[in-house]
Image (cartoon, rainbow, N blue to C red):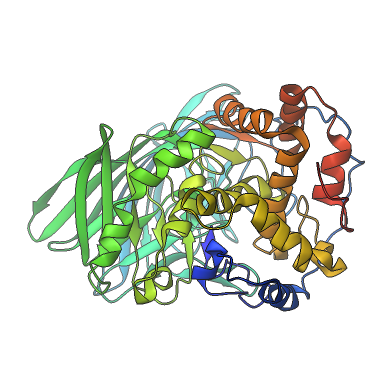
Length: 495
């Protein structure tokens, strides 16, 4: 995720988007100004584990997320969602049916789904009506018969209402946003549960199918591969499928008056949607998504999904971009004044590897997403002839990172209120480059390519990444990562 500057609600935005390409004209004084803007950030909980020394792979046993224990549910593993929704922009009403196929990982007398603000009409489990209760944002389902451990079961939920966004002073505005001509769903760490019942945690990845029905003349875009559309009696149903497992917060929809461009790139669908209120120069910028993905593939390995593209919103409430799987969404400020947005496109496309294909196990692993996507901006800057990654690292090292305040929030454990802070983005990118200086270029890029290959379509933890780095490099790196990820003082210059 990126914002107009970055999405860091805990502090003022440090700079307009164009400066994130960090041209040589971005002086040390300007970087010090970034530090001043961010100096109030502090972590909200101490690191509770012992120093990392040759960490082993983390257990895959489910459990509450340390930052967001209220997100997600245990006892089952969803394999697929088949979602059919109808949305009327005039009334702001949504009606939907979701078919959820899952595997019970323990005996289930009842189970929960996340659903915020919408009303449930009926729930069936394996075709039989189920009892339904609500507990806050949880939909509690009790099937007629207990589900045995290892049993595959199908839950169908019919629901509806007026979806609304979630607003948080520290996490910003997420979820379903109605607009005059339609609506869109976007957000991190949760969004999906504002428009359909879901196990809303990245640890439970699944495949998706979407059938989005809107008034004729409007466009409805979602993740993955387009599967056609049909119009009947003044309504058009747009069909999409994401056949590669996806974390729930990456599920997106954008409905309204969009210019839609459908083509192919390297034999895969390329879908670009730009709101009619934006200039056509935006269309050309997003059309570069395939080209930019190719450059990233040279560093990170083969592109991991079966479609390309992007969506540009015109709604000023969205000051950030989100890496929605195969179809990132961009707020309008990134394109203001015709500025070059290739840096943010590179950031969101880097997430297709770091965050989407390889997803976090828990939200305290968020640097594995944002640190690497921010570092992709540095690599992209060097690729297009601007500052090199080394020059950018040194600008930070002699600027903001020269102050103790820069290190107050640990990258590997920033706390839920600093999930999108400079500690995760800029300091995260510095961790990545410090690793590169420590192990050397050949080993570093081998680490990246083998990591994305080994963890493709799954979830991973920081501990697993450290173990992978040690295995590939043949070096003990626990002390390095303890200093750079969890320390609160500036480490020695790497290399």
